[in-house]
Image (tube, rainbow over all chains, first blue to last red; front, side, top):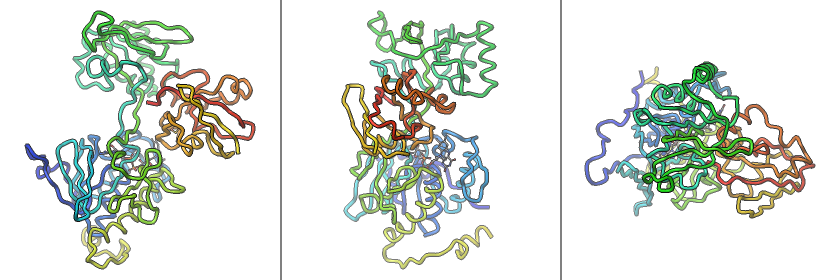
Length: 362
Length: 109
Ligand SMILES: Cc1cc2nc3c(=O)[nH]c(=O)nc-3n(C[C@H](O)[C@H](O)[C@H](O)COP(=O)(O)OP(=O)(O)OC[C@H]3O[C@@H](n4cnc5c(N)ncnc54)[C@H](O)[C@@H]3O)c2cc1C
Ligand code: FES
């Protein structure tokens, strides 16, 4: 059996106080399909890797956005779900003992005098590596925030994008906005707890599991929650409503040209996730939109030793496909090894001829 | 080439030339029109390429307002959805769209 890579092993626990320095052959930013396959490709060339991801789990879009959806265009797999593909990629990468650092976001970058790169994280780590691979997809996936003036003052106090502590909602007037599975699941679950729960959605149709839609309609009929047609327009609260800063009084919504208020002390917003490239976009690399411009022969960015693969890279003809990310990982690794180990001679080898793979996998 | 005008919420106009057969979203991205994010690259999976078709054009080419079921579903993840809302990656540019005007929403999310 291949050894599985450690997940935040004890040797990586950030030391208290100063930034903990970790030296490695390669640092991969992003544990989506491209980043995971990069572990394998770099491993085939004898380079070991640490992998960062801001999310609590590996898999990027495949696990965060569509774990149960079948994918039909992975060579050799006529049909495989997002989650199953990631499990296999993890097993394949595990052969080379990658170290995963989850809930860890890459922040700063600097090129050192010896040509290696230093990358810092929001968890106080500092990685030093000759090869850094940006496999960050469309960036860190974060909940979409509606364009409401003054929204920030309410966030974390009365407006939320996820349920961390359900007691927050006990005995409160709660509005849940959105029409997908998250909105419905939480409406069903929190309705018994809330004083009054209003589900606010722009149309009668819901894009959610039929069973949840049925249950929600039942609860509406039984008077256990309310469903209101409309879209969110604004918030009322704070000093203007004679309340503390960040305290919510009502949600202002509109439908069919009519604007109305729904009393609310808490608001949960479920409008999906959007990628934010965040600090990586400030590294001074050449970009096209939110993507890093690369040389499609090497996948190097405008800075030597910094590579970009998967959805995060841009070159003529680029397609945002998992398949393309795999190809990009292979070419990247082929080039990266000569940078990480310039003193060694590098020959191209097929996996079928590699003794290490034969020994471990038979 | 087909001329398309994107108008941002402040009224600023961005005129671009687009090729027939490509999408409105691609035209916006290629010309770096601000306010069109297109995170999913046109897969109708992100709703960050939301635009409003100019009412005069909606009248002239009513099919510009026809949304597929998937697009309608994805619009649940956009803000301030109106009757003339479209995901620009789902609009294929045709010759009769020369001069088309669309409005960019305040925020994609
Ligand atoms: C609904 C849907 C269906 C799809 N169907 C298909 C399909 O059928 N076939 C296909 O080939 N493709 C499909 N795709 C596209 C495919 O999922 C992407 O092309 C693929 O996930 C890209 O992989 P990636 O590894 O480049 O990036 P991602 O999967 O986006 O992963 C990037 C990771 O990097 C992390 N990250 C970003 N910035 C940082 C940072 N600063 N610090 C730490 N971590 C960071 C993110 O948290 C994320 O986990 C689909 C996409 C969607 C949304
Ligand atoms: S680009 Fe993502 S839905 Fe249009």
